[in-house]
Length: 353
Length: 180
Image (cartoon, rainbow over all chains, first blue to last red; front, side, top):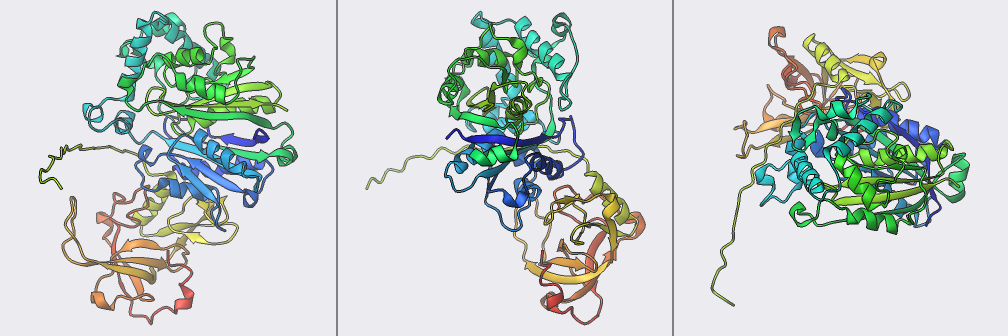
């Protein structure tokens, strides 16, 4: 079960608005990931994609996206209306049948044509919440307020997460929001949804990401230093956010434990903390707390620096995998999230050989 | 069995989602050519197939295509398949009379233009293999308004319909690999 590795990857830089269509972003991305893995697309045993047609409002856009993988001659493929991290989960499960040894995974999303507040409200219960127009920023604001009320975090703590994200993003050519603001400067900004300010929110981003998985000796043949998936698990909480304690993330804790995270040292951690308070909640859920080496968390800048929804989680996995492949890290944890305010959480443990 | 009927609670949840995007650069070029009276596509550098409009890649070879691969195709072609649509009422319906919804394979192209109206011929004479030519709007009435990134409205608001040329029908063998 743990002889499956990431042997290839590629992503497009996250931008506020990509003029290309989603499939036009995917074609060179998939090609680059396969090239890095030294794999011909015709050898791929299984393909799985993660995307959401509601982002661009294009019916069956996910079907067009498949042209980036080359669907002729016919291929074995699947799609999830979820972040590409879950497409990778499905591919990982498929590889465990043992009859194929490579898989292609990709995630993509263009959030630019739509209003996130309109689109993501449709994810909520249609009887009580969606008609109120409850938007993701308001929900995140409620979560932030609840976290402050526990006494465990302050607005300054949120701004520190944001400032570090932007500083780390300076070294990431694929990140969108960069800079070197001081925490004090950030705190001067007005609220967008109290207690959240613009820097506490993710940007709107367009991007695509692709990953190649391989099993056992095939992985060793395709890649000099594969990033082995030592564990992969995901857990979901109740749908109605009013029924959850938004200040904790038990599904993240459980997913991490089931993925084999034993609390040991981690060289790199990439968290899908789409709102700054969520990084604090996730660190606590993973036992990384206040003592964590903050510089090892989201060295890519994380989702506060680039948030191409449907690709964000898979990009976290890629950011860890590439650091392992380069030898810069040996053991890392990547996290992906879905649903509202950390409802659904996936943890991926990656290691060098 | 109980005669009492439980009242079913029904609520309406009306959803409105707004989408706003610019045409992709390739489609922008395609629309400029259309308004200029030319229909262009991309020719795959590997297999030579011509897609109208260009997609930016060949879906069979999975190689990228760019402006350098742009070629012009004719405004004459062949009806490969069609449906006679009988309108039914639904919110937003604009049609009232039965109309033709045809795929047209332009001469020089390997992909078809979908959803084209075929006019100046009785509907029951429309057939696969029928040779047709585009009916262009006068230049000042052309716009790219109906062309979208979705793929609908491939020549709409520039070419309103196609009509028979009067030529003998195209041999089926010549278009049966290009129905879509």
